[in-house]
Image (cartoon, rainbow, N blue to C red):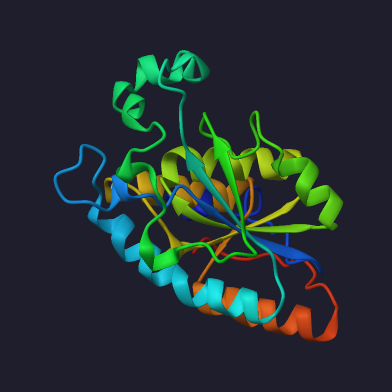
Amino acid sequence: MTDRNQNYSGVFDGAVGFGQRPAVLVIDFIRAYTTPGAPLYAPDVVTASEATAPLLDEARRLGVPVIYTKVLYHPTHLDGGLFVRKIPVLQTLVPGEPLAEIVDAVAPHPEDLVLVKNYASAFFGTSLSATLTAMGIDTLILTGCSTSGCVRATAVDGLQHGYRVVVPRECVADRHPDPHEANLFDINAKYGDVISIFETIDLLNSTQGNGRATPPTRRQDR
């Protein structure tokens, strides 16, 4: 039996690369995940949201669009379908609930777009795809939580909608390290490129400075 990396080598170690028109997507960095005592509280989300702030600052400086999502339901929860039955705690995320608001560490700026979603993928039932198409976006940088849920679902749909998917590993988090690492590995193997925040910022600067895309290269799992 080979180890994990040997098993995937030569089959699931390609890269999608970095395109010419990136956008940053901030997925569900809401207070429900960063408030001690809240049912969804995950300390690693606090760290990831704080780590994401410099990336957003650099994106805005370069004129790269920043788009947010947050989960919000009608008080009847009819728009949550079976998802809120499977995860009843989501039923608390209704208008007026402070825990449903985006955390201060990555608070949206007036020019940023905030989309409301009801399910895991930021694409499902939202205007995200149409918005990205209209803006000419070809690369989607994913930040947010949780890695095994909304980030992974958005990564899969992002690739299936024709976008290069990039995930800065410091900028995503989960409730527990095991699903976090397992899903980063899977995203990197099949749906996008998992790289460091420093490499992401470097790519933003290089591509936005010279207008050239970075071609895909074969790489080891990070």
